[in-house]
Image 1 (spheres, rainbow, N blue to C red):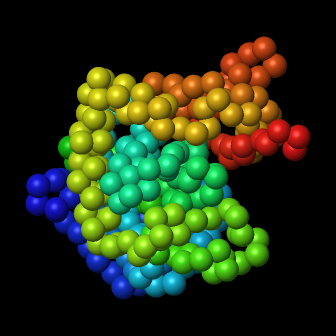
Image 2 (cartoon, rainbow, N blue to C red):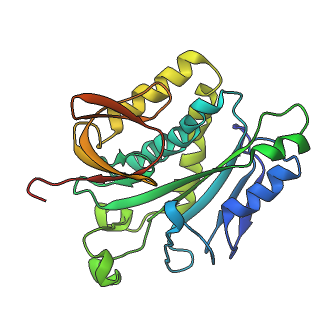
Length: 261
């Protein structure tokens, strides 16, 4: 989009991974703002190596190359910027009940997954782009027109995923949603550049995060713990109260624990 930093848009009918493509471009020194959008991914993945398959051309699969000049401990806010921009665009498309399940899912009011975000960094590639901050590639997959109905989902995903088409009752223009997302992303990325902007991102994440106030189980490589999510740190991390103490979760798999489970 000429009016944003996202003017270099690469479009593919099929690609293995939009994130992988941009990481390769980042290693070669590509500047911030390159965007890849695909009709289909053959090796798309989410957090923890999870995969997701949908018919070609049904959903929005996009990755953006960012180079925020911020401390490593604040780089999670790049993920927040993308998630919040997606919330802005989806609400503009008519779905008002969307929120963020920390760290990387967008969900409907019933907790069904509408979109997933995956950020990947390659700090050593900074040497290939002299004078540029290290890259972070953030990809998002939004369920736009698939599943069309609950019966489209495999049994293991029944009740767990949803699309904009299901939620709004009508087909959604994927290209219009894509352009709305990029327009919403411009001010969000601009916020990464200054302390006040980063504070605004963290505050907006807190306001739109359905995980806060919820009993959660946090699965980490060395074990799990339960507690109540009480807030979002200035870096965009989840704050959990447990056993009379407070823990800040930088990365982990967070499960919302239902009463009686």
